[in-house]
Image (tube, rainbow, N blue to C red):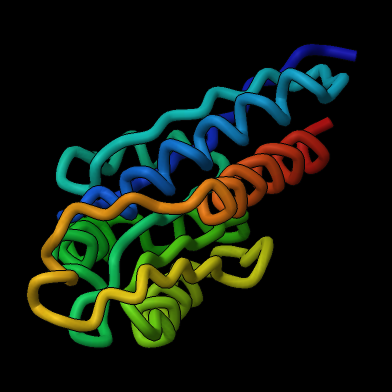
Length: 174
């Protein structure tokens, strides 16, 4: 069997480090899963901030993980700007590719998760697993803006989702 190459792209935005921690835990989980899999597929895993993501990087990706905070019941501005910059340029060019979502939120997260799902439905991406919503409990101005320290369990959930996406990509291409 011939070796093939595939790419998992993790795009994240974070102001208080919660989403960044989750993105890098997912990255670590994808790498760990790939070490354990016996596959003829070589998977590259890239983790980039939303403001640095380019259309060529997105087109080169075979799967996606979007990591962002929820602000005021919606995606953070920079993550929404990422989707705004790339939505029409990629329309009908990335159909069918698998994706996952991680949302960090104070007490809810559903609004941002639904927003990502609507955008990804328009791109015709295939959801691999229900969105992971990680709640920090932040509900005051001070706690919302404070740097976050997530629990090992929260980081482990993100690591697992990264592993699931890498495994899904491997199985799809083997």
